[in-house]
Length: 167
Image 1 (cartoon, rainbow, N blue to C red):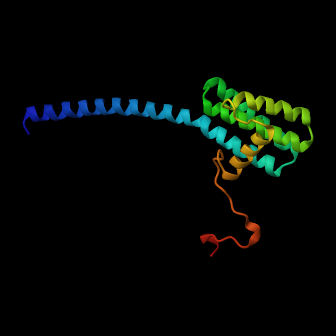
Image 2 (image 1 turned 120 degrees about the horizontal axis):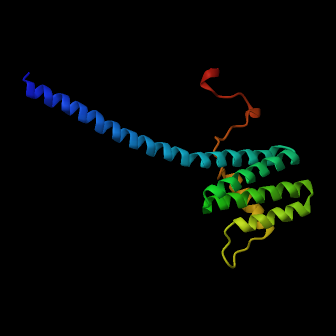
Image 3 (image 1 turned 135 degrees about the vertical axis):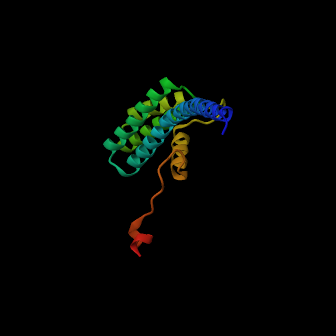
């Protein structure tokens, strides 16, 4: 090889490494920002699933604690990023708390939670936002699995599991 080819090769390699490093760094920073913006969504989904399961299977005290934990986290998230999704989730969390309080027989706490839910849930003028309608909305969302980020599990009480590991 001639000296000119060697110099061209070395300069091309240095330039390629520099440009590639710069582009890689900027794309890595963008990816890091994107992953940080997803973290609150994942956290709210996990807490939503936890609160739903606690309200379904746990005693009223634990269900109340789970609903209040979800509300607390969503309140903190709302201060960081106040968007309609967070507001809607916060409203549904208050509806869940109202359902728990109703099951526990705490009417005052139930009415207070429903009042808070109405603050956060977007309701169009002329739209019915009765207590029963809000509770029915939450029940339908829970049945559909909307807002839950964890996989559905099957009931293993009706027979043996059909796993490839057990065969």
